[in-house]
Length: 280
Image (cartoon, rainbow, N blue to C red; front, side, top):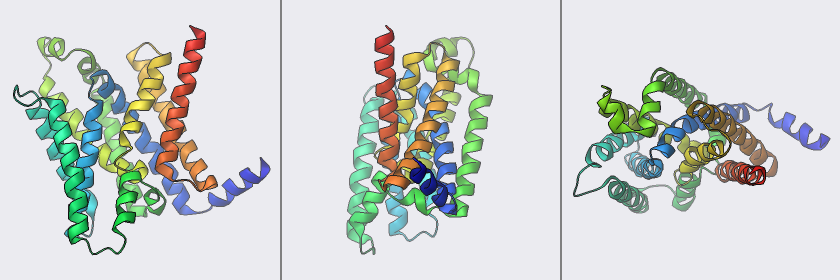
């Protein structure tokens, strides 16, 4: 145990480890906040679809040699989220069908574009890093950290300001609209900040694993808590714990960061299910 502690203290001397912990914990926090509402609304697949859109947008930015891929990726993902939200109620094309179309199409076109036009000598490695976030969280610059922290704090602020509206949206859109709330507006806000979280989380767990940050903490919290507020708080705490533990374990054991964080989330969910089942 002493050897592990000494090794951890040694790695904590390096800025890239501190950067990874700060960004990882914050992004996991905002993902879990949105995750509670998305899971209750049965919008979990929205995060999965937007993550693949973000991969396609990042591929286009790489092909066009943009100096900073993040702004372009965020804009494209937000536009896609708004389009899915607006067209998802169309009788001829349901929301889940739109998500599936955007998800598969963006993945395919992104990889095809990188294969045909990218000048990188290691396309497979770049794609693997983007899809699974294997090392990118450990190569963050100070600018990346500042952008992630500012965006995360803004999302937390927006969520707290609109907490009661998101609570109403989570359970019954029709009742919220009948009570005078502009549900379209708040659904739009939810879609936009979800898109931003998805893009920020790509450096943490990669585009294929982002849904885990949204789904697992919320599901774990729902196994032990009964009120919306307690579920939100529990999901936030669990997500931060799993992100911190996953990053630390990945550094000490040399495992990929993204899959390790997701494995930690899955482990907590299994523990909660076993505890809850035994209690019952």
